[in-house]
Length: 334
Image (cartoon, rainbow, N blue to C red):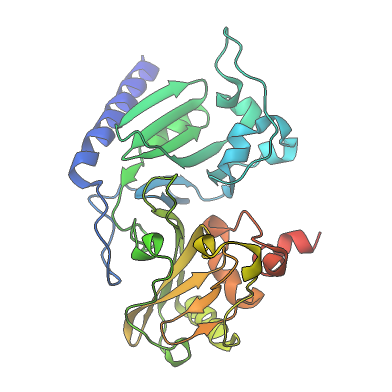
């Protein structure tokens, strides 16, 4: 009887979640940096959990979970190692290989919906279907909210706790807006030009990773986010200031200028004695790479980039051999 009551409460919560999107899911247009907080009432997280953000939707997960490619863990589960499957992850879309995994046996749920095959996963993706809903199959609950898919694959009790935390936001818990002009215009420079070398009293930096516009994808939104505070934020800004002027590494001969800015970038929202300012971190294209504070562009170095591509902002591609030691040092030290 208790299980039935719990299940009923879970279904009611999921329904309420979907109904709530009409009131607060639409991302606000973002111009100048904003100090606004998350939209609406943020659910309380269990002790030891953390927030993960994607495209205007937040979900809570246990703090010990790692990060990885959701496309590979869920879509290519058959080539994962046992060690990989035992590590719970929050997964975001990434490139995959041509390897395909076995399809469905009509007498069972699809193999990719079972934790025995994939391990524990919360996966994000975008969909052009703007209707909202909740679907269940195997060990998976899929929440569709404002064009975002949140795939929760875990044992039922944990799965239900995670789904109960899902909610829409205009600005997430890390201070990152769901949309930013740099997504649609990757060449845009910070409106408030302030040299990074002049910043003092840095109290926080929100590192907001955005998708760059592509005609084949829905409108660009936030991919992931993290926040640095206090002395950690101050040190990170000082490392940028140490980087050489001029930008790069660039290799413009390797791609067309129409895609020279790449497909993702990070906007750093810096809170300091001069107020809220921006630095645009470009790294995914063949040209225009570097830290742009609106005054000058500084080159990418391993130490200056590292704090902003950790954890949820981890780079899942190398974006060229020249940037491999900077963006994927894990691949150069093996």
